Image 1 (spheres, rainbow, N blue to C red):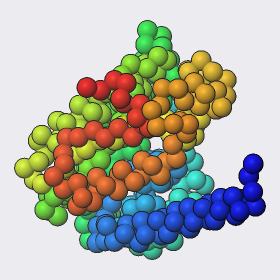
Image 2: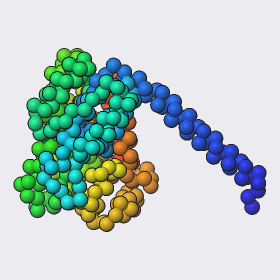
Image 3: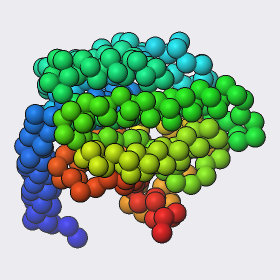
Image 4: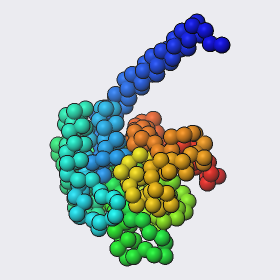
Length: 310
């Protein structure tokens, strides 16, 4: 039977664990604070979710960040149960990043329009001195079965998720060359590693991102430009938690999403990771710690990739 001594020991152990955890977090924050010192980054889709988390993490690591977002839900075809970020969310993201890195700033633009990205890169060079990192994160989704997808479904998703990614890297390349190299990071998905029912165009686009990443890595390596991809699993973002995504999985709530995926995630009972988990990987790929890596795809999916990769 538990005694008062046992209770005190348990309480002490809990306090020690909490203290160690807090100390670890402080050490981690301190070690990250200069990892991107002197670097300039352009992050697309920066208004919320993964893009905002990456922008904040880069700013905390010493980078100056150009946040890029369309921030206009009316500029893309409407999707039941989902919208892209708006101007209020974009302003909030900019304020959060500027609090960490005062020289950072936001640029509204469309990744489907190469001129918008060229303008953002030009501003990065004129205002911040150059460009070292681009994160092609902006994404869009329409839920449909493969054979049921309309031309609007396919074209609208591929224009943003594939052409928009290519436009981002292409716009950054001249600035990288002037800088003597750079790091381009693309956002794929575990949907780019396997088939996923109900996500026809989106799944195809995320496979295409991986092929694009490897092709760019092949061709740009001679200019000391590294190109790597991140393939997230379930992430707690407005897109993943949207009604359309929930219905595409054949369930009716966020709780049901989690219950469905829990049994096939080797690392446990938190199937929807916070966006910061992807930001940490993006920080690694942007930093000198990954200087010898290019053409890689890093799965951040609580081990789900153990089910489909060799």
